Image 1 (spheres, rainbow, N blue to C red):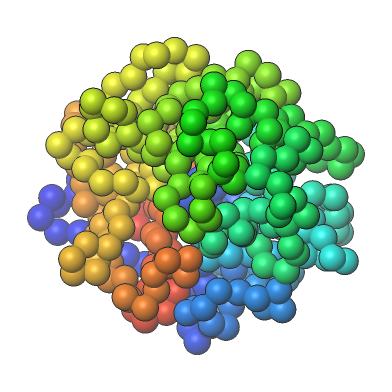
Image 2 (image 1 turned 180 degrees about the vertical axis):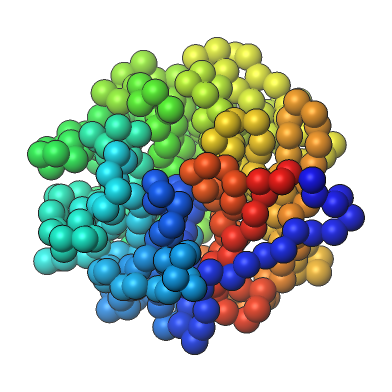
Length: 385
């Protein structure tokens, strides 16, 4: 078991002189065998990427001294979520990622053994667990409304429209490339509307499919002035865009994960209650506070594969350190996995969040960090905990 008074050992799985990272917290970089991890490699760390900056996609071989093997390049990436790089569900040798090709943002499925490439007409945001569909949105609009989450290089074609009827969340068939708009921005701007939505710019962010592939979460956001205060509502819907349900409507929701098909963990605000990790019951007004008095700050939260533990992190404290945390809701047990220095020059859209992620067997945790002066990837063995 872990010693509560000291941190477990941390292993670097990438090294300089180049920088390496994976991206967001809601995807696992490990393949199904546990031998390989996906990563991005870049030559700088302290500015936003331009349309001409390529990131190299590669495999980390954990059995061969963490050798990094390049397999592709992408021109559609950011520091927060990378290029949505991930393994194709149900396969051992195919990956999918976003790219900028021929003046469009697209997604690419690559067979890393055979070198076979298939291009799809839209970029991807979230996949169903059976690998059949992708949900996605307008990354050009996201780049304008939420710097650090979209991609550079293509202007938003709907820049003059505050809530377009023909833009929003799309569902794409990964076998055929056919896609359909399932929820529009205009639709959500008029869904139980609020007075502060009237003259605001609207956009979507953070899509995540439920474990049974029947529903998905999304954030509807709006702001009267881009770059100033943004307001947020948390919704769920089915994959056809129907049966939309408003989970949280108190201005702030940030990070979340599905615990199971009916419950969503989210850092959110409820008026009269406060800001907490809430466990919401989908299509219900039921909720409970998770980790009250223990998990006191927003972080990138996800459940372990057995759904028993919550993995999360914090933003920099007064010492510019981020803390990596494990929490067992039933036992109300908190384990601190480490505190990692965050260089003050890396703030805003270029920050290096830990974005902790689980291995598929739940034995390891991976995170990005710049505490050694470079952006690199690290793992911690949590199996004994």
